[in-house]
Image (tube, rainbow, N blue to C red; front, side, top):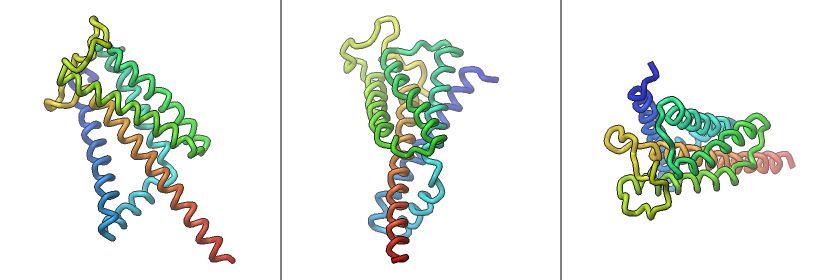
Length: 196
């Protein structure tokens, strides 16, 4: 039931869905500057996610954490040094966002955003050296080289691609959290002005 082939396909479909959501969000964000229809759709999306940005980020990072544990502990694909660095970022982000969602503490958006940007950079470099091993520079172990792609589903989705997709989606939720905080402050200011 949970064989490696099934799980690879499942994780790959999650990565593709993540990419569609993130690209759609950034397309709306760009389009909002030119089109009222795009601005309306963006506002609808902000309203849809409002109040749950940290929870969704925690779910994404928690899923990435469980996925990485499945791949290493159940599927027996040993993580390389760069995989470990991505884990060092993803695992605490999962805990921080879960606690922040529970405590309703939106100020985590800045440190979480910085962490996921670093994680995305590591994932991007890791993905790049899987395609171009000569760029690696001997920073990884000989026994578990960072240039090894344990699999490439659909010809391009590997483990660092999946991690990078998760980091991008978490960043998107942090950007939405920031935007919604600004919208809430503007509504509060407007309501205060109306009362005066």
